[in-house]
Length: 411
Image (cartoon, rainbow, N blue to C red; front, side, top):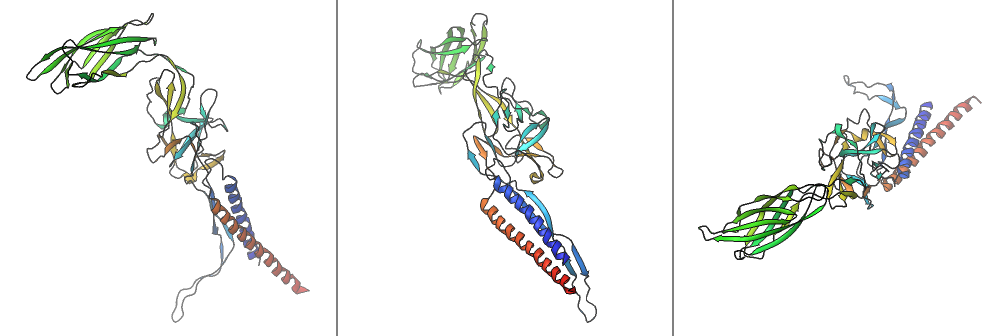
């Protein structure tokens, strides 16, 4: 009878733990990035009253006789399944679609989370607003290029809204589109382009394309010239074949007069995109580097986690990229509270890399991952847990009544 009472006590205790887990799941049904817990039971020791015997002669074998001594916890699992994504429209809200965790700097150590409700602090750091931990990733250099992306080069992501970007002189200009094959000799077509000196001052250049000659062939060709004027100076020639393709003069240079204090500079010209067909002339500059000074006005984040800055001078440039960590056994991560996880002896070593590689998921900007709690399942589990607790309590009360009857035998 005492065995049955202790079995009932173990049932009560462990069903209470299961109820604790269910209650925590339901309490966190609206917690961003929460991962539901699940309790599994197992039987514990069995007392063997009689062992098994093998068949012998005319007698068959007998099975063992064992009495169970109750039940215990097999595991409390964290189910790392994908939660639904909810659109928020806030650019710094991020969700991972697929496997992986955001990486946070926890006072020199790393913590991991699926909660991407991030924000910017006063210094432009991308942070977890509940605890100030900084989101980790790779920072681009002044030209928008990234260094080697590996786990050893991750650092705090900083998005310095309002920070200035230095001016850069125009070093290259590309032209494209058409020169009219029907233009008579000495006929011209004029277009213009603005370029920038080293101080970011705008310089206006006029490009004049003049048809100089037509050679009847064979094969027939058109000999054209180009002249840069205004703030630019330079000249060159272009040759087109009978098919309207540029065959010579695809590149050139011009000297641009800089503003006071900037000095003159040389710009390379590329005409390889030009054609000569029997339709109106439409030549225009289609590509140009160089820009005036500007300040970071806003930014965007794409599915790779790349942060791209938008500057007041019209320039867009990469600033940073968020890192994502995966684990061989994410269910083995240790919960730290505040929607954070840390490595454990059974989670495996973190594998940090870019999104979309090595089995890592992609980033969904402007969204958050909701809890993966299934309320219908939790309420069903609550009912079965209540019944299990109630049944185990009956074991104790019935065993107590049987003990009472035993005590009454001496009366």
